[in-house]
Length: 207
Image 1 (cartoon, rainbow, N blue to C red):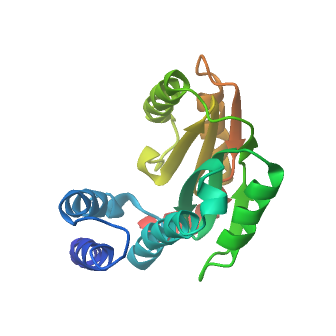
Image 2 (cartoon, rainbow, N blue to C red; image 1 turned 120 degrees about the horizontal axis):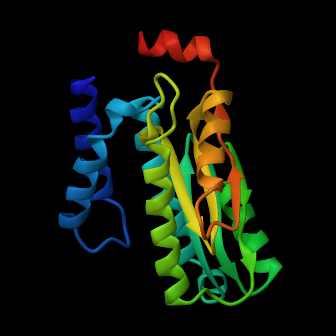
């Protein structure tokens, strides 16, 4: 596993530094190496982690390449296990749906969750509160009392007080994680878009 981590970090850095629209590799190098350290907790393969990182970058490049999209929206993109979660705001439903359709055509995308809200961009104060809620959610997930559960396997995205949960988890883990986050003050809604793994498959992969 340590060898896979090193290979993933090196590959991620090498590819990121060759992508257009990026100004330099310094900050991304630190991010790539730090992210590689989380692979030990992953149920995704190292290749899948790399594919998700690249898919996010490709989707962001796609948005930046279309002024009719980026000038009329503030869309955030998260990829997990080749599923794209689109959050943020767009001025019209046409803009939101058009970008979702474009993103769905990117190589390797399995499905797109279009959660883009129609309306003005949220305020800086709201963004700050969302960041705080994400931190609170990650802290709450540390208290999920299920043998073998690891909060590092859960991707948390917060937008306008709605918390989205992604990851490869058992049905029991999904229910417990959702309930923990739902109880956090300030959370308006929790959207569970987990993908389920069978408990036996979990035991086999960790044994």
